[in-house]
Image (cartoon, rainbow, N blue to C red; front, side, top):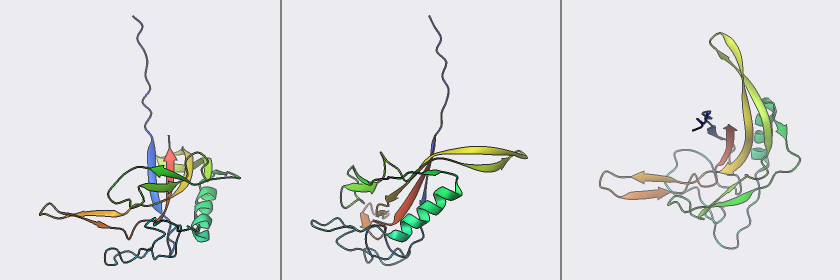
Length: 158
């Protein structure tokens, strides 16, 4: 009987909010701490017939991160619908980049045990955040859609 060797590969996905004043596909505020469901509109709630418009500043911030992490910026990147049901996702899909991300093949240098270590970044892509579930002690759950559409960067190391 042949013994198979395995190598553990641990990936890491880190989401970072892009500090824009408005959401990734609409003009709603991204300010934190507002009363629930006050920073929403038909676009970020995914109402029929709406037309999302990409936030230019979010793209600029994402490109700056890609350059700062030595990534190759792809000449073409696309957004797609990632369909799944979750109570704080009003559209039942998330707009995200998957097949063609913004940037790939980057790296950063960190100090580890008094040595420099190079950490590779597989990809950086943009996506929108979901809402927020708030659970009470009485067993009731509430949904706050203020975060729906807040621009995120997803940094992936595999």
